[in-house]
Every structure is written in C-alpha cells, then in structure tokens.
Length: 161
Image (cartoon, rainbow, N blue to C red; front, side, top):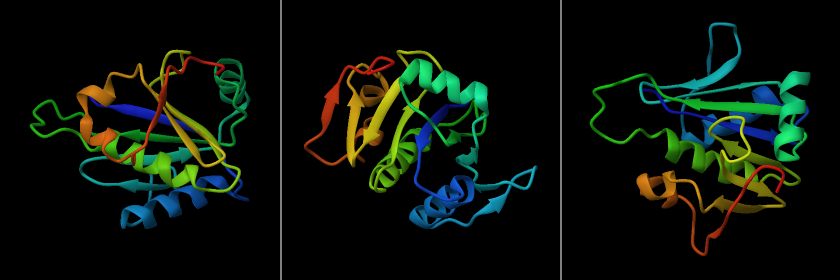
C-alpha cells in the first residue's frame, strides 16, 4: 500500500503552486517535471510530490478542522510497491520539506495523513515546528524523526490547536 501525506499551507508566494515545487526541487537537488495535467511536480522512482491550489471545499475543511486558511496543498506519495524491502523515503522527504517551508517568513502549515482532527503529523508557524507526539510514525520511522534537529518540540496535536 502506498503512503500519502498532505501539507496544507498558507505561503507568502505570489504563485504558490510552482514556487513551492521549484523550492522543493532545488532543496532536494532534483528536477521539476510536468505532471499529466501540466502542473509542476518532483517525480522519482521512490516518491512523487505535487501541488494544487485548494478549492473552496478544501479551504473550508482546513479552516474547520485545523484552524488554518490555506493557499496550497502539497501531496507526498510513493508508488504502490508491495515488495519494497527498504523503508519508503516519503515520510523523511515530507519532514524535510516541512522544515524547508517552516523557514519561509510568515508561512504556516500542517502535515496530515488525512482530513481528520487526529491526523496531524506536524505543525509549523513563525519558524517553529511542533511534532505531534501521538503520531506513530516518529516511532516506526525513526529516519523521519532524525531530520528534525534537537531540541525538538513535541506535544499532542489534535485539530484546531
């Protein structure tokens, strides 16, 4: 089964979709490619990162569930590879990108596993990153946690926090 995470963000970019993907590609030292609909993405054999501008329904859901007005959604996913022997790099990559975007002045965002109040992986605002201590991934994928420098801020994050 493939992994998928969403980064819901309010970024101070004039054109958030291509600007975010370009920053991510440069940070990961990977090329930007164009997806099936012509949108920019970072696509490798191990993971895919693409962005879209949230519609009114998505923005309302992010506001209602997470108290976050968004202007961009990034999706981190991997190919469905049932025979994968090594851990997927998706969680580590999304953690790196969370840190990258947290450093952008006035950026706010969260990474979630789905659109439920208990699905928050991490939250960033004002350059500060807070990890959800209740997310099992920090325990099962220590390589994702290793991306976050010490000292780490961890607390229980549930919906509108």
